[in-house]
Length: 463
Image (cartoon, rainbow, N blue to C red; front, top):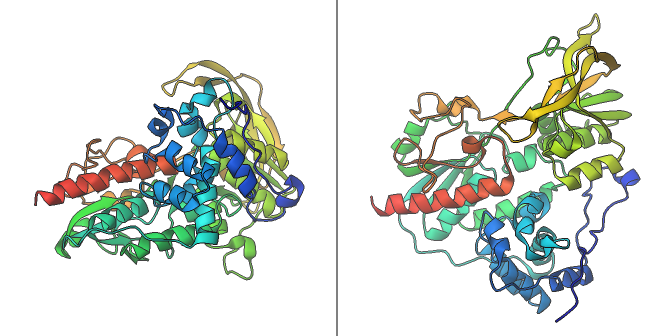
């Protein structure tokens, strides 16, 4: 038996002091030599538990074995048989809490770097082999509308197209990708990668109509009147949450949605080459502890901020952001003010934020999330100077699409579905991703979209 290599092969990366000045991708990808050595770490378990941790059910040992054999075409074909967006998933999915967490090696050593290998074969196909298309079933002569061109919508559309349905995606923004494009900066997910993955879905026969706001431009009922026999809602969670504390309406305070959309989708970091400006001061506070917080903090740094603080009310242990993203932020010089919470913003006579009153916290008993509840420490208030604030404490589904749709929703505004089929309370309307769960991960949205695609197929097969 070959000797087990305990640690993952290192991922080549840009130097932190260089990358904090640019929007080029931080992780450079495995070399062929590193990818082969990493693939050899896979034990090829007879009962591969890693697949259980993959929401889109990739045959993980199967594609890794093909890498070892030098058959990279075979490797990417296996991945793409269940995942239409592998170059994206290989970059932004939290593998450490999904497939890699289930890896047998993880019981004693570092797990196989499944995500890095997925990215490697996807990039290799695009750059060296040329993208090939799978077989598409004979047309069923039925039309399906997909609302939203994000990860859920693209996945559902791609799966349905392969089944033989005529699929049209309706997207509210002027470009595809949804949260992949407006929410994730290019240093983590380049737009060129999104373009390539979307192009793959379009080549399956999917049509996209941009600048169509469902709930305003068209209603769900009108989609049915246009001949669509089923509808999938993959509209995500684009409505930002706020803390509702004094001073929150001061200038210089952004939601993370606005801040990142201006930077990523509308290319504000290239102003004046692009028309959208993004004002960033010298001292920036980003509130929250998730991946969006890390993205906003690192984006502020790259837009010229001299000092960026992440302000989080719990400890580092409770931070929901990926360990890799926290590590990259720290390497780039982001300052973490943990167990700290804002209680009011203080502005100048012109209405611009200048200071935040903060209070120190301590952890009490666990709350419904299972994390210890942060409790304010009386008398620990202090005031700190900040001229820009980005609020990244979560999002909810946009209620616009629900107006008059007759869909059952929860008190949080998420859509209620049958988990086995993805069907909503209205026959023929399905949903999946953040519009159902609230803000979650790209791969979970994709997994839900695959379930809905199968549900739509069963539903339409009975019509």
